[in-house]
Length: 209
Image (tube, rainbow, N blue to C red; front, top):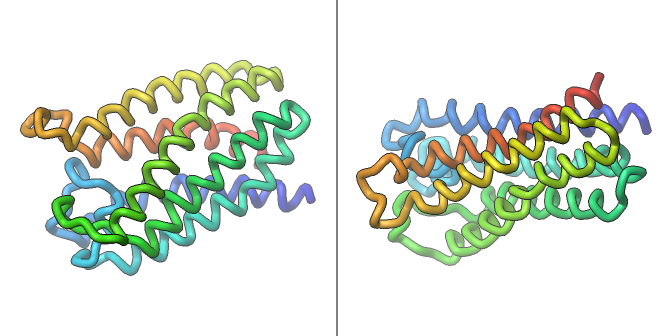
């Protein structure tokens, strides 16, 4: 059980680090893609030369997040069962809605083209992101309850910054912000992910050690 606990945290570290790295490496092989102005999901659109690689990764990423759930449960169950169940529920929905769904239901290169697949992807992604957005806050509360004040403070700060970048991400495709720095959808999404993941990275490193 202790061995699996360690592997669970390694799995979530791979998922989070891979999410950022893949989103920066694959665009090198997709000339029409802009890391600044296009969402990460656009890497999997039907016209993308890296579609297969991206979709396989998204499936793997979702499975890695799901594999980490028992480790999250074991670490926090004695601190607060209610908050722990909330965290693992949010992580599971993110893994399925924002990762695994992305593998099977892709967006189109242009947002003007709407299909059933892109609509399913949109709903799954939005719900997954919005729920995971509150994971840093929950990790912060659990950390304070567990006497880990440093991780608690860092998690709350990460939550606030993630909220800011998520807001910018949502605002980025509004017509009134066209031509401004706010339209940098890809940049805000990647920064949002970094700060959503940061608390789990800190907890993962402590747990693996």
